[in-house]
Each structure stands twice: as structure tokens, then as C-alpha cells.
Length: 194
View (cartoon, rainbow, N blue to C red):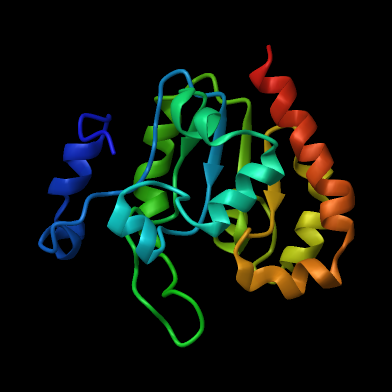
């Protein structure tokens, strides 16, 4: 985690984050003025919050596989940015984690995106980011958004969360890995090899 990253001190000093700062937690995100691909996900999981390494879990391994990139490209190229819908692990719920706080993306994301003028593709992972960024009704079903991903190109590419918790969804929707993942890999490759 780069503690000199833009916005870092401002996020740490925000009174709305005092609960997390008091625990000694740091915000988890990655911005780079030269990034070409932005990943917008839910919020860090507990392991990610503890290690301060984004997507440092089985979900991250699957995400990199779906994107067709290595860990080195993901973490060290400077071409991949990550903005979760909340910068901190929100805690455990009965099923999965507590949802991200609603106002974090509204307050912070646009300023951070403006800092990254070279973004060519934003990968929207899961319903929170998709409902926030795509002009769709709240009742929109994530499966339909992902199936019709091409409606949101070239700017946005909605995908399911790569968590092992979604293995049942993946088994019921084989078209995702057969058709959508190869298209995601093609777009990522085209952007990163320019």
C-alpha cells in the first residue's frame, strides 16, 4: 500500500472514516494518473483489509484470470486502478459482508476518476457498482446486466463478482465464462498493448 498515494491523507482525515482510522486501518484503493483500466468493486474483504493488498484473495486470482493478466501487470504496471464502493472492510453480515456505505462513491469517486484521464474501460464488479454507474432501474437484475454487457461498452463492462460464493451462479450461467470472459480479455489486451 502506497501511503503517499493521492487522496490518502484526505481519506484518512475524513471524520466519516474515524471509526476505521481509530482501528489503525488504511483505505484500500489504487489510483494512478496513467491508469488505463479501472476496476470498481464492492469493498475490501477482511483478508484484503488485513494485508492492505487489493484483490489479494481467491476472488482476485479469478478476476486476474478473467482479465487475462498476470499479478505483476495487475499490481505493478501502473495501468490498473481500483476504486471500491467503500475504502474499508465493512464487517460481516449473516450472508457475506455488510454492504458498502452508500455515500463513499458519491463523495470520492468522481474526483479520483478525474485524476485518471487515460481510463479507457471501467470494469464494474457486482450489483453495487453496476447500480451506481449504469443508468438502470434499481430493480435491474445483475444477470441481465452482465448478459447484455455490450449495451454499456465501450466505457463500462459489468461482470459478476469473482468470489467463490458465486460458483453456483457461474454453473447456472455457463455463457459468462464461454462468451463474456473472452470478450473481456480481448478488450483488456487491446487497451494494455496500445
